[in-house]
Length: 142
Image (tube, rainbow, N blue to C red; front, top):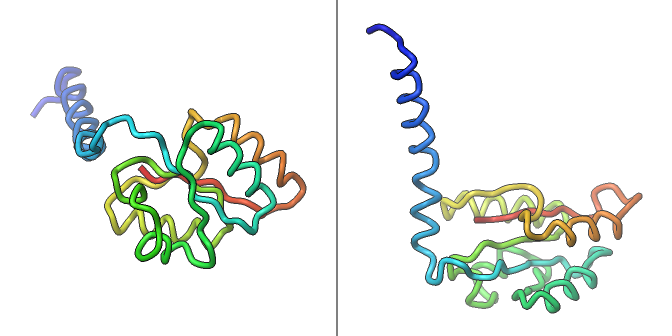
């Protein structure tokens, strides 16, 4: 088979479509499509109060992870943790690792950092934990 520009571009488009399809399907499965992201915080980190205040001001649901993030997801957490909305977290390292495992288990994308719409919060968290390496880890599921 002769490789032409058309063949190459067709293959690239097909590959892009395959990688985007799961995300499109997941977004379509969300009840309202545009749910406000929920925020999960570790109350022991220095920026916890700042994150809680931001969430309340923005009208976003917020939950504290307590001693174990897995317990929040599987036992005692609010219903919005499973309603299809994106979740943003500001936790310690162990909370980040558990969140990544939960995302993998549920077949959802996981990314370090907060969603683009939360850039101001990400900057404020970075300022609050400045000079404290590893004091807070931001992540996103969905």
